[in-house]
Image 1 (cartoon, helix red, strand yellow):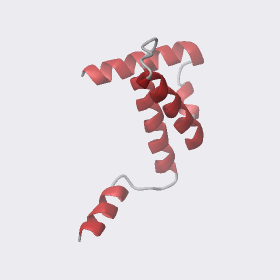
Image 2 (cartoon, rainbow, N blue to C red):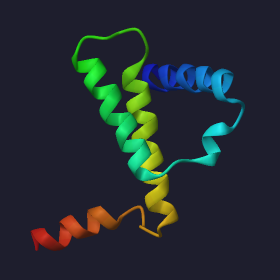
Image 3 (cartoon, helix red, strand yellow):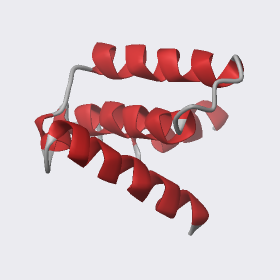
Image 4 (cartoon, one colour):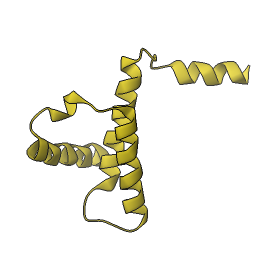
Length: 86
């Protein structure tokens, strides 16, 4: 519940900054990963001026949505790992 609340607050702030449902426009995976990298670096450097961890979650989820749009099934990586373990 704690994680969902924090992520919800992050999304609410994004809505105020960029407009309702702006996240639905999406970005390229490269843009998401650049954001993830930037927020991770800031967090590791001790910056707590914003919720970098929630921003990282947002970016990773964006990458996953892009994979879904590329027809990568939800169990693709599970099946790939299972085949390697056989």
